[in-house]
Amino acid sequence: MKQSLLELFLVFAKIGATTFGGGYAMLPILQLEVVEKRHWATEEELMDYYAIGQCTPGIIAVNTATFVGYRKFGLAGGIIATCGVVAPSLVIITLIAMFLSNFAEYPVVKYAFDGIRAAVCVLILNSVIKLGKKSVKDSLCLIIFLAILLLSLFAPISPVWLVVAAGAAGYFLKPIADRKAAKTSGGDAGGEKEESK
Image 1 (cartoon, rainbow, N blue to C red):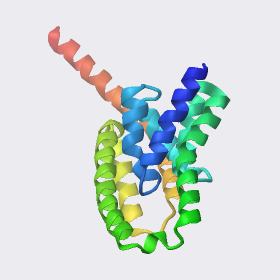
Image 2 (cartoon, rainbow, N blue to C red):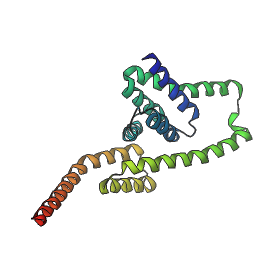
Image 3 (tube, helix red, strand yellow):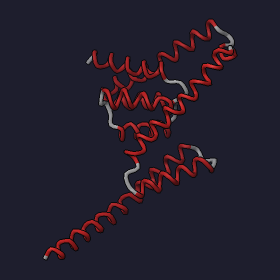
Image 4 (cartoon, one colour):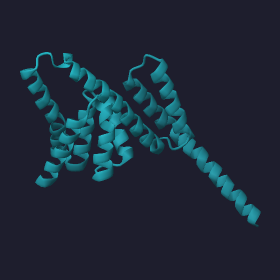
C-alpha cells in the first residue's frame, strides 16, 4: 500500500511539474499516465472527474487529482494525489519569489512561454478529439455537444452552468432516447422475423 501511495504521489508530482497552461493542459498527460499506462481510471471516468472538477470550487487540476486518488486508494489516495499535484508548483513558485523579483518580465521567459502556450493548445486539442470520439456516442450526445459548444462560444455563460445544463439534458432526455431506440430495434427485429416466415 505504501509503495502504491508513493507511486501515486510521484505520478501526480510529475503531472504537476509538466503541466503548463492550467487545468485543461493537464488533460493529455493525465490521459497518458492515469488511463493508458496505469489504468487507474477509464477515459469516461476521467471525463466525469473533469466535469465535476469544473463544477466544484477550486482548481480543476487539483480537483481531478483528488478524485482519481480517492477512487483508487480511498481518502489517503485523495490526499496524496492532491499533495503530489501541488508540490512542484509550490516549490517552483517559492524559488521564483525568493530569487527573481521580475521573473515574467525577462525576454527569455516571455519567448519560452509563447512557445509553451502554442504547444499546450495542440495537446489540449488532441485530447479533446480523443475523448470526444468516446464521449459523443449517439445523436443525442452530438446535439448536446453542439448546443454546449455554441453556447460556450457565443453566450456569456459560466462553464459551471453549461456543465449543469448538459447533465440535466442527459438526465432527462437520455432515457427517452434509449426507449425510442429500443422500440425501433425491437420493431426491426419483429419485421425481420415476419419476413423470414
